[in-house]
Image 1 (cartoon, rainbow, N blue to C red):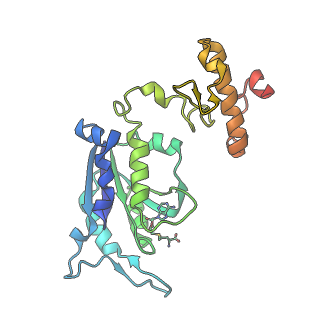
Image 2 (image 1 turned 45 degrees about the vertical axis):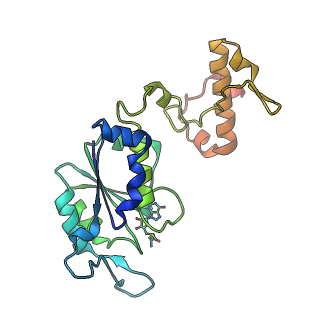
Image 3 (image 1 turned 30 degrees about the vertical axis):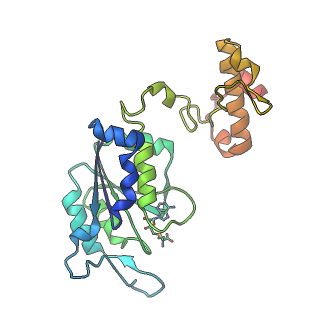
Length: 241
Ligand code: SAM
């Protein structure tokens, strides 16, 4: 997969050299390119913003600068992703869908955001454009949202996570539940013991315990997720939990 990130703060994306994403880049699984939007400015001050039409506080990013940059970076079939607090909230489902794309272009806004005509223009030109939010709060810029997207998507690419099975039972996966609590050695720590069932070696009982814990946790922390489960997603034992 190729990912281009456009930003006025390229250094913000430096963590993408680390850990699994960094290894995916070294392995050639992920071709990640970070660009300085100011490289597409034409004035002496390398200006990317201007005052908002209609008045009001703050500055808006200019469509001509973004247009020049995106015209250069977009390839046929590329998916343009615009982080914005007014976008659709990014979910694991979105991450799976985006992981199928060959080329992502992420345009990081700053100030009061990017002139609305940028999304409008590329949509009208037939580019797939997704405006996404990473949650109901406002950040200073889209760079953190770009980091979140790249991390969530890259770990789904084949070969990035060493044991693909570890992706199967995770929170927000196919089961639509949060993950059960996990434990490792030592079996007793500061007076707290690992649940006996996990030391029993009895695979069916362990699977049942994990399912029950996932259900309890989801009911307590995210009742909205439980309510959204399809009819038939719960078996008879689940309904007793
Ligand atoms: N005036 C905008 C509004 O109220 O919707 C907020 C602009 S914000 C200060 C500047 C940039 O940060 C946005 O253009 C976007 O790229 C990014 N951003 C802020 N919060 C975000 C969020 N929750 N999800 C994704 N991107 C966000």
